[in-house]
Length: 261
Ligand SMILES: Cc1cc2nc3c(=O)[nH]c(=O)nc-3n(C[C@H](O)[C@H](O)[C@H](O)COP(=O)(O)OP(=O)(O)OC[C@H]3O[C@@H](n4cnc5c(N)ncnc54)[C@H](O)[C@@H]3O)c2cc1C
Ligand code: SF4
Image (cartoon, rainbow, N blue to C red; front, side, top):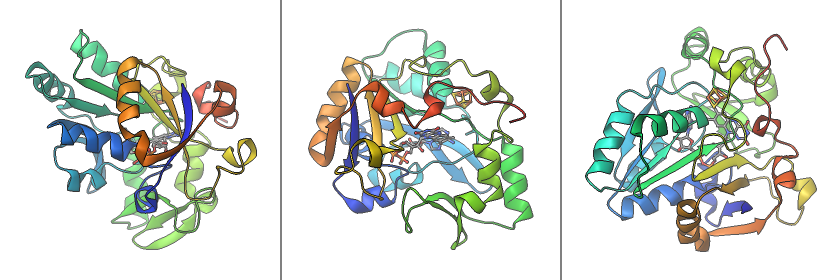
């Protein structure tokens, strides 16, 4: 099944990149005594951390447009899984695929969530941009002026994404990791349970469901994913969509980045 979805709570949506679907999935894992792994800023770096209390989930919310350093995540995920503790691992499709390869076996207590992935800029490009512009804190998806025309928030100063040099390098495939130019994890190749995305173009596909506060596409890929999504559905407004509708305005679902565009 594929859905268009948005959290009913507008604050959750404002603090998320698209429709705020990751947050309730993560809350449910923690309520079951589980642990959530995802990407968080750490000074001029982005790295995977583990979160086991709901207040800290805010650190994982929103897209950070740089490759996240996994540190010891795979090893720590395995330790929790072997103890029977629920784990939600969230990352790029290649990070999910890498985790599955590392684990070498299926676990009923593991939920893998990834997203349609355009690519990840290198750490070098991110740190150079932050340093050259003397930025301490960045939010790549500030929606206070709308989601379709999102802004980059640099220490409180807003810049339209189309005017931001780092975002233009990202969108035009100029600052990505080498692996993104030969990505083998498009479509459903990561075997994640749930894939999330920005539902770009929803205003043309279903104008009544559309608003400018962020809508997610949610691809339910496994029975485990379906069960977890059913558990949060009462918190969301949803519509069912076809694969064609879900991906019509989202070429990164199919296509890898192109060098020298
Ligand atoms: C680098 C990158 C490229 C993307 N490209 C596309 C695209 O081409 N098309 C599209 O539709 N959507 C893309 N997305 C996904 C989209 O921006 C949203 O993350 C997704 O729709 C989920 O939104 P949400 O509102 O449910 O949750 P959010 O709260 O926004 O999601 C946060 C989740 O994303 C994870 N995350 C954030 N940054 C990173 C990172 N650097 N590395 C690994 N995990 C990270 C967090 O761990 C957390 O689990 C991309 C996201 C990232 C990070
Ligand atoms: S584009 Fe492919 S290789 Fe690059 S971060 Fe995304 S999944 Fe990984």
